[in-house]
Image 1 (cartoon, rainbow, N blue to C red):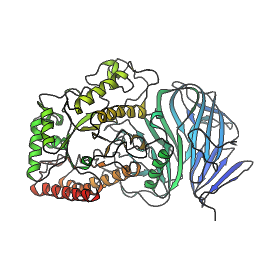
Image 2: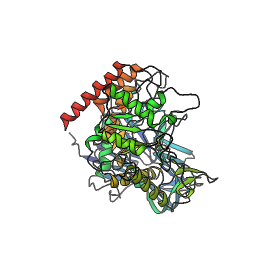
Image 3: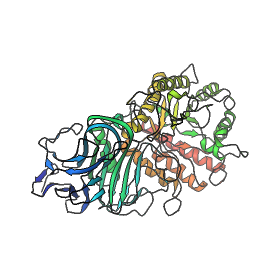
Image 4: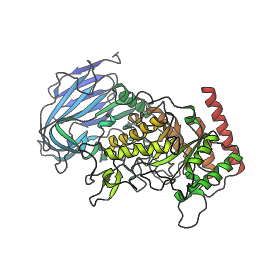
Length: 606
């Protein structure tokens, strides 16, 4: 019997075959492809070894291919040392670079793919496991890997809700999105950059079918993740993967792409755990949270956003207009009457006069510092909702601007903006300022994207995409911890590389329906999201969130499930906004009982 660590290579004139206990890979010289199968021979994919690394205005097409060769030394920067690895290299002539190479690295439990280019220019779209080519037999255009799988596991929540989707459906993982059609895929921003291919079709919007799986994860340090999105791009029985760099990463010499790791796994959860382990082992993600969490981080939360949305209000008055000191006093008083006493209170959108500057709106919060002091006296902590990227109130040289010069986003690449942000955080959390206890950071999915934005205050080479978001959150995190070491930052960024800038991971807004238009239970969505976060950031507390909920029955199910999976969060006080149903004494008593049981379990675990 072949050992788990054994790897065998059989060389051939037309093909090389690598065999391990986990997979079999046959590399075809004539077809510039590698057929990946399980040990029994069932094919996962005929992987295309073509690739494209576009430059702005210069599409990358392959027009000359050398024979696939076995590398003399399997080691490569960023791969890690492994004497048993077998590495094959396909060198190609390129229309955009002086040379391009695809490196295929085989280890006992996985296959790794990287692209290398030589030359000078900026990165635009990068395609892996496929690309544009002009082949010797006259075939031209875009070539893809084959889909031997029936389904794809997507680790980020989407609308419609479809955790495991057909292999023919696209997936986008990144930091760009909103609620517009075709863009609601950045609820986690960024999510783990790890898909999984399955042998069986899904029969439920949030449950994962059994059978064998192939995890496909992208390994990169966040500082080198200058792309906004990783896309799974299928078409007519084929697929390739696309990284969107937007022309913002300069190459001068040799550039190497992030490693794409293909690994057979028992299920997607094992794939996510292995993805995290790969990042941690290579020093690309922290092994544990930046600091041990304070006990109060696990206290039940009341966030006022759901109550703001559910409150009766005159025409023309939006939910943000009800982020008011008197309203929050009333909501907290009603909860206290029913023995629902949160340990943490989140003041949501919009307590501030301008999103970018963080000055309190005195019409809504005439004494925010005094109000926070009152919560402290009651044994509670206060978080301020923060809208990431928003440029409102900022000078142009601290922003990214459109071609007309209009500010579009705050620019973490601007030293002036980072300095301002540090001062704002110090003022909001410091004892001489508001003395708040942290932030609920939202809208990280509004990361700037595209080729036409300008950055008047940022130096050349300033971070972009996922890397820029990490710089933004790191600036807030460092400033917060400097003034208040136990400050809590809540984000919706469940990527292992963001474990050092997030203290608590929130599961974010509940979605609505599956692709057939049928409602999806909020509690089922909660369980899926919790499983993703637990797999990739196991040491971080989870804010279970709670908005929006369609009806009271679904809300009661959600309340009951929260304490088993993470930190309970309550958004509603008087009624449910989706259905208009009023919350009764019995409903609030349910919250009180669930919170009591949660606190008892928490105390026993300490």
